[in-house]
Image (cartoon, rainbow, N blue to C red; front, side):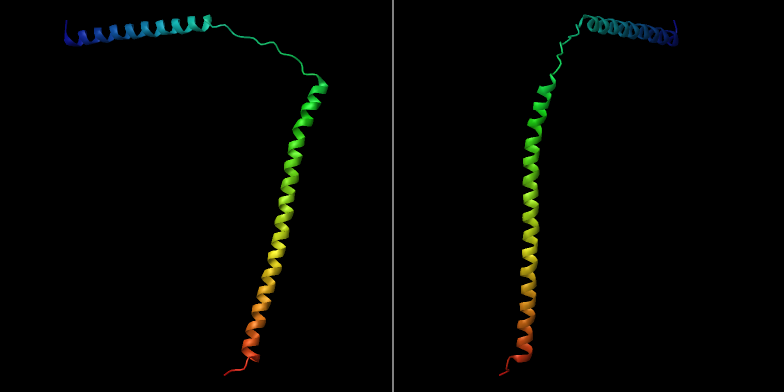
Length: 108
């Protein structure tokens, strides 16, 4: 037997062994999948009035959160307006002070 024939024979044997292993794994997986039982759960219908009560419980926290956010928004707008008035007063006061110092304050 030549070395080439020997190597080809070994490759053929390896292929057969891999094929047998693959078939064995597939059989094992198939047997495991067939053994598993599927669980079924009994479902029940929710009464109409109970569904309405659940909806009522869900919208109340959302309304409270919305009102809180609205209050924060109103407070933010009020603070911005107050800050704008204070800034205008500071600017006008600074301009008046500088004008007074430039034109009406007597120099020594």
